[in-house]
Image (cartoon, rainbow, N blue to C red; front, side):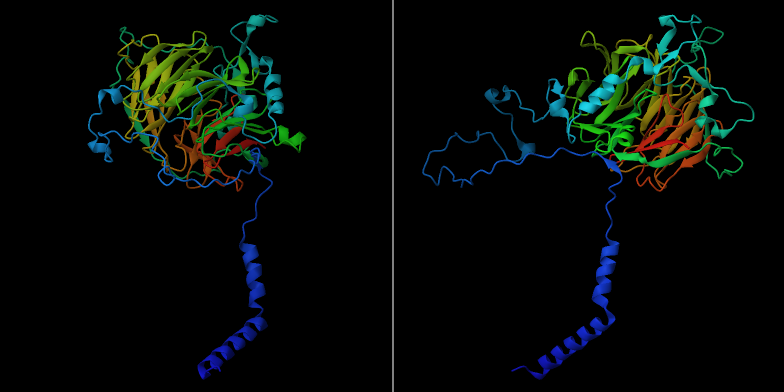
Length: 551
């Protein structure tokens, strides 16, 4: 029989239930719960991994030790010199120390066929057809250095840096010129880098020159006075896709006008290709093709200058692979135990690779000979983050390093053992990029010390430091400022607003910020299409690629 306290408790429960039923609280709570659930956006393009085949069921076998089964042990046990404390391990005997150490690595030191490297859904047959259909004539331009008409020698592949293009502007200078394709005109490439003064001395011979620096702080700008929005850029929903599953370290456009193809390499060793025109015509294929040729972060991607169906990739796993679409294989070009942090090629020299491995080491690799022809072990005191070459003078090389410096080198005068710099730019923290402008007359450096350096002048003697928030965390890639389509603007990511800052080299400040509600993450790595003016790609830590185009 219930006590008085229990009866009172049951009465209170009944009264509360009647009150909740009268207020319809439970129904409203279920409605609020359904409203707070974040709906999945199925409209955004994304890579699709192929389904794993179900393994056949095997009977469960109970494991028993040899001791419980009454059998003798199958080994003699650990050696007497073994210790559980690694710091106290004595020197092993000779018979153990001479044995080779087995390195735990999943790298495949052999050519990797497409069927094993492809990690997407379905087949990559359409991707192969697109790459093979991209002929060399699609990215050929007339060379003004030769006035002959109809001669095959008068055509030359336009480099990915547009080395023969400059912008001709009328006064007053309009900030919207970076999206005006009609403003571009070709110019002959006869300029030379001045390395000596009137007395015959080389003003760029020392890396410890007292450089005149101009530190400029950003200020508030009235955008209405700057004619920037005359032809703005826009971000459309069909130009957003998740190309790779991991954090993107490198994003590149294929240098071709007729095919809009974006390549991206991520932290997990994946290389994804996105054909932006595929999803418009074919609903069944979103145009995203995922490969996994590496087992560690992909540091660089380079399209071969005279054969766009070949793509070179480098990775922290110490491998350099050449994707040959005609053979449907990722060929192994180079292997090392040291991580490869950057890779580049000189303009009009597709048979040589310049890459950095380990800490401060730089190698020159001959693809035809299959061997290293030059190497420097201590070009920098720390890892080399970027390698770039001047479009005007391909023998001039720029490197950036975590040691806080960006250096200019002349390949013709670099010694085999003790190379000397033409110019050295010092930052207080790591420098993650140093890129030449399309004309080769300026250099932009990006450092974690929250400055973007601009080198200009005949001998790069003038340096301006533009303040910009370059701080990132461990979850996103470091910022790298890239040039637009002339020497007027630099594009770099903006962490607080999740946008892209456009910095004017003339005004020495940010003049525009590309923002859109569709961009939901920070665009860390950026690339401007080398042939289509106004097309910019920003990549994020979640594997997404956002492509801005002119309206």
